[in-house]
Length: 300
Ligand code: SF4
Image 1 (tube, rainbow, N blue to C red):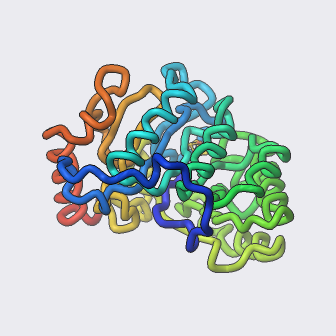
Image 2: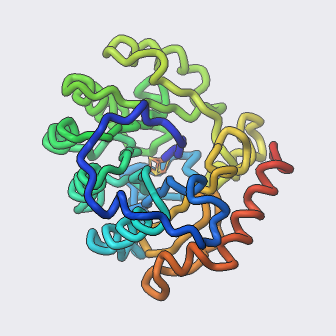
């Protein structure tokens, strides 16, 4: 799943629970609360696809260590809103639609005034789920496609029929009045289908500005591609602005990371509170390390 920050348009005003308007703590190890308003929740490590470029090595075989429940994510987000002023959340995976509570979590985030974005490959997103999403404030769906042709996309995703299912979800979302952001990771196996992808998306009514083509970053399986594919960029490239912003990420096992690209767990929420982890020295150091890499390691 590609993780593109700041993909939400200007948010519409939604209902805001008391918790999101609580006073922000000023004495945190985060250099500024304003720099840390975005959180990524990787709600499952499992995916129905196994994309060649997957930065998280996800597949139908992963996800065995998932243990975060709906209540755990709500608790974490409640603290992050109240104590750190969190205003944006991205619901990620793996494929989040494979998580049994993904719709409830998204509804809860939206109801609590968070700008909420679902990042999905679209394959397992049900029609009823989309109807529920279409009623939410502050919500956007971002869908990844793997290529412009069925042949290329299904081969990259290692899931026959996936391209068709993804396009169906995109069309349904548009039909319900939601304009998804559609991203395609372009690399040697699908660059030749980029125009085809653009045309088919424009044809179903997606505005040009909501179609993004981005190179893979050297994370997970894409690291292997980097040996022979020059389109692969550093994990810390400018391409991913989360590196410099440090978008806090919590995965389905309960581990906390300073940023999506970081592989250094700063602790588990089952052992320490999220606030304690965010205020720890280790958190500051990891954030500084990531920012140093982002400035000094622009390319692979
Ligand atoms: S859709 Fe592809 S890139 Fe995204 S999580 Fe699944 S396997 Fe990884």
